[in-house]
Image (cartoon, rainbow, N blue to C red; front, side, top):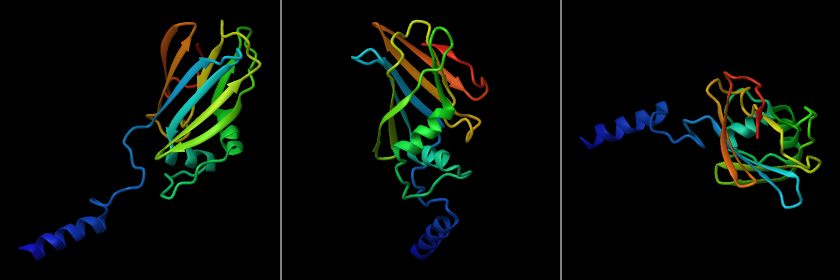
Length: 165
């Protein structure tokens, strides 16, 4: 009997049914927090799964397998310049600067700043992070500005819709 159990488990593992997958997760989502920094500029902190984010930056069509490298600030900045947009009340693009990329386990945290944006009144945000990878991608953005909190959802189905922050 034990021999049958061991052979069955070995077979399932060989087929990948029981094999653990590095950084495997069923959700395709990012979480972003937008706040006003103490110096008056806008701060954006984006959290994503490291395997998806690193693969998107590298231009891979498949999920990156372990070990997954933490992307450099420069690589993250290039990717986010194409996928995250912030405009002022007049519709002018605000320059976003990556100030930090850090990793915690299977997550990556990227901090961006828009130092030239002095007021968030009328500002609009676009978040298309990982839309190039997943049809079911959902990007959740939480804002906390002047004591007012709101949650925005960005989906691939919506496309590049800018939303007021």
